[in-house]
Length: 195
Image: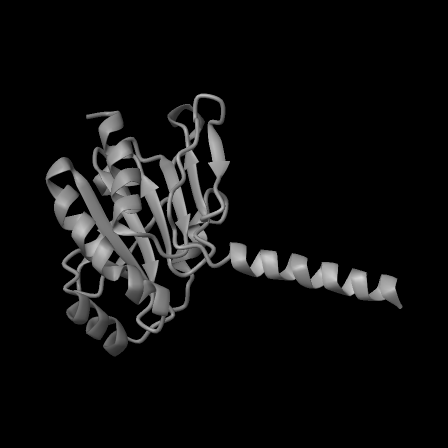
């Protein structure tokens, strides 16, 4: 009876640790990349050293504002792709940080692009207006456009953010919401690599 209780208590402790690990706030912990060229921190952030990066896949589509976006046309800029939905509370939490960093880093050749997924046009337009988002968002109503990344660095959560370097290679992925300071730090680091 006592062994069964201990096994059950141990299982509960492991489950609690897993749940708590998944509730991070997106903070980036500094890691010595001289010894680790690729790592995943407990906060859901993956960075890839320049020498280990692979080309981002072909990605394009119509935007919420009636235009279109093609990732290949932005080579030479850092591109930040943020997957979001108006129905997603963590997306709403990080929206002000995305807007702020996009505005601050635009003069440095950084282009933010949203990927609005599994949403309605009305919900998406309301979200853009509510948070004052000025960068374009690709419409991906059924999630099919996101499949372009399945063989590279897939955005497997909503929200997710991918950072593409100036050479069109995947440099970082953030799963879950991120703070303004952490996002600015990651994107600035990538932007400064070839500046």
